[in-house]
Image (cartoon, rainbow, N blue to C red; front, side, top):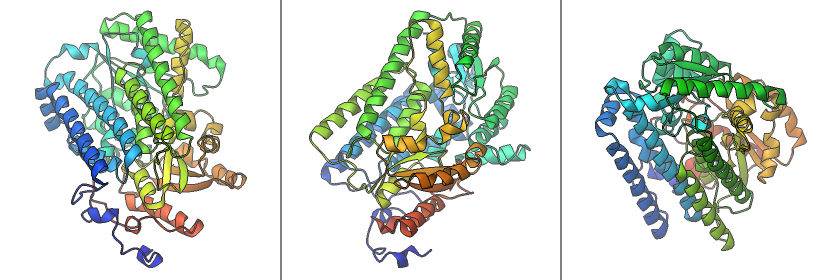
Length: 519
């Protein structure tokens, strides 16, 4: 469709004019007014400082890792990702978003530095002997009772987070997986990890590896392939699929006790119950602060929201579990900012026309999609499906009660709660939209997610029962922008907003543009 004919304001200058054609490369920094432009630049410099500190943690190994691993090079674009995450933001929302970004950058660089410090490819290291690798969807609470053990993610940085930096990164690993003869229509999250494993691009870390059956069958098959190519002891932590059934709790606790014994056997460390309870109490503080932030997000003009709010939650769920003190510090800082802005009745996200939540697996190759919706159409993303994962308070009365809570936290992990926890949970987005006073749902339709595809008919049928909530289907291929491009994601929203809602864009330069060669 020729959007310039549809909208007579197409020739006006707008945000997209700042970029070179087909790229995400800006001709100059975004002008936000003197105060906000200076603030944004200072925050950008702070992120640069975080990267400098990252290199100093193990300079030789980090440089060798940059030369060794294909995925590592994509992190050179991390500062560009920061700029994309704050596109079009001003005032209160700019400040809360930067607070989330600093914490994500600090934690992510810490995780990657630990990978390099424990990588036996670069020589023997005692660090690896006290390192436990966790497969995707396994958060770190189970390692909380081991004060001298460092939990590390096996897969997140080679695929998911790397894709945020560079939309073309997963494509090589997906092609590797398909050339190996594995099915091309499996979940991209699992398929990318399989490609990384086949290409031997996982660092040779850890004393042991814990794999699992989450969140779906595709991931389970991927775990089997990864296990064959690892040189360290592995164990499967099989968690119940029907997690609402109390009869499965006893089984789940037994599984986690086996994991604890496995870690003890391979690291030589002893599980410390008191340390475990201490960390779980910090985990509960994180959950309490998250719920307090939700209370603000539900209010009009809240300074908390946007893509980084959701990504921050994903980060601390996956990597903290009460272990990282700067998570609570950031939460409390943001809550104070939100309270101050609200008391002053200071406007936040002023372009808002629609309040939305998103559901389903998003196109991870388009991190700033939420910013685009806000700047182009005034669609303010309050929370994503991942925001609702975890958030389980742990009962620290005794060990079995606490481990039951940890099991429930795992069972509420990324996509597990919504896609394999019973069909009714896939449909909870209607209730969550109302909880956040949203009038719109962005329903991500990942074309390789069989669980979500099977629910499409039921979702559409239920729309008639919720006439006050707009539902926009956005098809994507999660990690592969070659199948459904960023511009195609935008086109689907454009079509709904113009054909169904009959609305005009806030910035016509953002309607139709080519960024296929962007990061």
